[in-house]
Length: 494
Image (cartoon, rainbow, N blue to C red; front, side, top):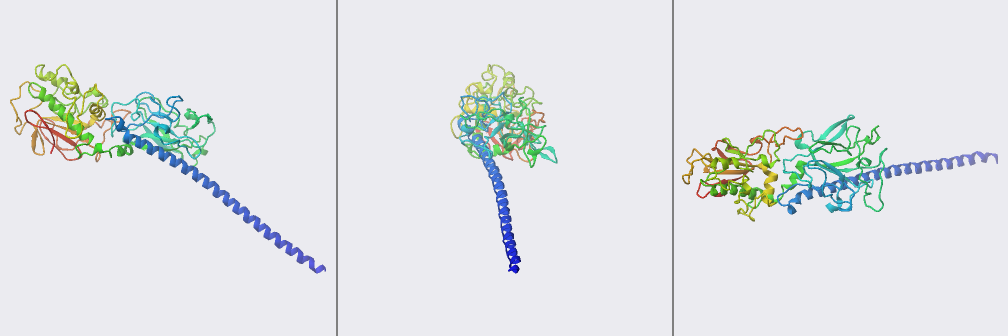
């Protein structure tokens, strides 16, 4: 009987070992499943945030794309954020007037106005949104087009140092930023109004933060200032000054690539907005000559405004000195003075658009275009926003002079501009999209003035600028010619 005891002990030990292995296996499985669950949860939160940010970005691009449909002559504007707790507009609505002109503004993403439904991050927070002052819809800038720069830069951390990720040069600065505030960090206290959908908590510092140098929650509040933002990286939420904002940006090129895909910008179509606008501007110039006492045309404005603000309508004045090539003039008082009261059309009115013959200009395609400044018309609004893109060259013979015209044709091979081998009284051009190394930055926010160079805008054969020269387009410019006839007429340049 005594010999059976060791056998029993060995069997028990074997069972215990099996149970121990089973327990270890279950523990390992539980641990693995736990880790998988945590990783899945993190992945789903990140994916939810990325989808929300992507959807918000697309909604803003769609808004810019269709803005002109209800605001004729205005392209590319973005909505104000929901940044003030008010009853009208209600929560999620774009506030009607966001700060001073040119001031960047930050608030909650206006999901109600964008009709996206509430967009929340993976941590359940509503998104935030910042827009550059030049691009916000209210109050509007006096010139917004595809060469208007953003006023924000994006940083990230490289070797524990903040480095510019986007916006190192003016033309790459950010137009808009959508931000996911992520989870609460130490020092933040987020409140939530249970009767609301996004909490009605309009204190960005409780949601957004930075690295101690850059603060995503704080803008300068000064017009045309550049504001900096920083995006989270691996481990940035565990730094002594933690930050965890996830964000996406909208660049100038992204926005305008969308906008110029509209039919309005198809340069070869007679019905495109910019071709119709260029034709109307040429017809306004021709009408000046046909209504003057000696069939003379006005001089252009300058190309180089010597550091002045190219957004200012009033600096687009004709030049009293000998000038035959420049930007399309807003005021033509110097030309009127050169012609004299007896010959200048409507001498009492300095603005060419308001002289009475540019109110209803019949163009080849579409309805007539009104350039009158007091009408809020599409034609004038389009000129106002794209005025730095319109150029005008007048022939030496047709520039203001005291001697009356002896009758057309008056070009003799030495005194007029040429397009495709033919002489014309004048030509009006619209400078198409930038190409090659062209830069068109304004002298604001510390940027160098590159709008002062004709070569950054038009591509023609030989723009001499002395009242002669060959203005045959060689790039993507639109050109309309004013004929050397009596009366002066307008044709699409060959």
